Image 1 (cartoon, rainbow, N blue to C red):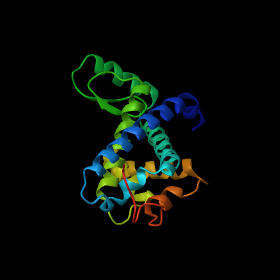
Image 2: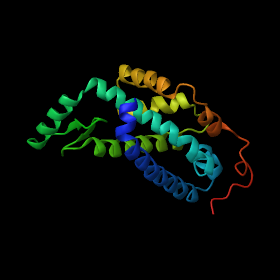
Image 3: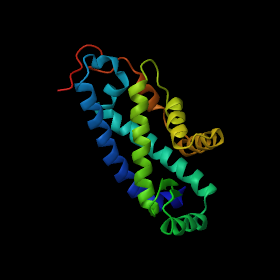
Length: 191
């Protein structure tokens, strides 16, 4: 894990910050256009300031979990071979440390950026659909299933996630399901 942190943490942080802002802009625009924004509790929570400090570590830990799993399943030499094959073919290949599908060669950093974009898009869609209860575990499974639908893959990413996250609080779980957050029940205003 420390090897990946040393090598990729800066690009992961920058990519998450950028995509998180896009996520929040998209949520805000969506909610403004709804006649009953109170029906979208999870999206409304994403617009609150504490959300960034709670959700970013979740996305970061999930990104590292996927990265570790992909690196184990597709070692560096195999990824290099995929990149070479992609140069001579018009076919899509999964590439980079995050194994993102692309018809053009991708570096590890490009694959990280694309993967984080995809992860936050999947999270947004999950927040949009859920209306009763959204657990951290369900969010993890939803994103994992969209990344790779294989049950073994999802299970491996979940296991790695729990090791990576070891000892951290469950603030995300509490935050996204808390009905008492200031301004959400009666006076929530997007403007």
